[in-house]
Length: 169
Length: 282
Image (tube, rainbow over all chains, first blue to last red):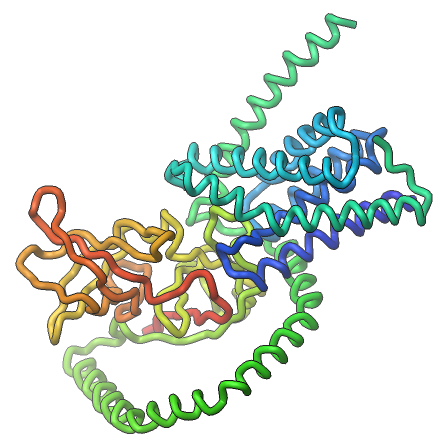
């Protein structure tokens, strides 16, 4: 296992655990609804810009674990994170990797994730369509995740310098 | 080159449609209340939750210290509150003993092994909550090894919170009553003086934290502030669990029955400790 893989696994693991812990210290419907795992998928992409297969592999495995540990669903987030991973690769073709753009990416990804999830739950009859609720799910997720992705991007910048990892764009 | 790109895009579209179709099917199956977690799922979930709990332990320690110091600031108010309660407690204990005795006598007389209100309590702490925003679920740190089973009612100090939907060896998932599918068709009774009127919860509104109770007899006057509790009918919840209090009463579209808006006794935003209820086996 090379340095890059270790850094990526550490970032994903930290975000995964931190999302669980953070959720326990905020109220259920607060302005700080966490999607830190999703944010970490944005943060690790620059390390794997030349190895998209590995990137999708990380997305899928993270999604499967997210399903089992947090959601009690089967492979739904595995596929969902693959789709999100695809969107991240496409957005990275348009936007350069800097702090502002990373926050824009986070905003787009939160909207895409909430939209897909909401549509799936409507189609399976688990949620009654209500645009207000959908909009609420997005704006409640913005504050914490924007701060988190900004912090994560700063950390990955430092790590790429410290361990001489190529953070491409 | 151009043909190759066209080929890729066409197949990509088909792939996306297939993935979405699979997702729909899998999601329907996964979210089914009757589904049990498979053994590998249980093992991975237990291991993952254990890691979260271990990392969370020092954070919890600090949180408890902060809570303790905050409570110490309000110690005089707490003392006054407890003093007031203490004056009532002897009367409540005596009443309770009397009622328990009466229930036992009636059970013997009617040759009943259990009554709907017979319950065993199991306290639990929330490990993580509502990560899948739409699911309205929390995970608690008690599972099969603690005797928790699917379908058990979950309460907190204020009233009914939800029901256990999935269990693994050392933790369980609790679906909150704030979930649209959960609060549908729960049988409840409204306490008016010494009598009860029956109804069904048909909806929950998260913006006002209120339930809508339908199918209430048209001939009864329901005062604001009347307590609403579960009836114990059906297999979901034992009787007598507080749901909330009536805030508004209207009639339905056909003027055939009354509709009550019931303010939930539980604040779903701030849940920390829960109690799982189990009906006593005969």
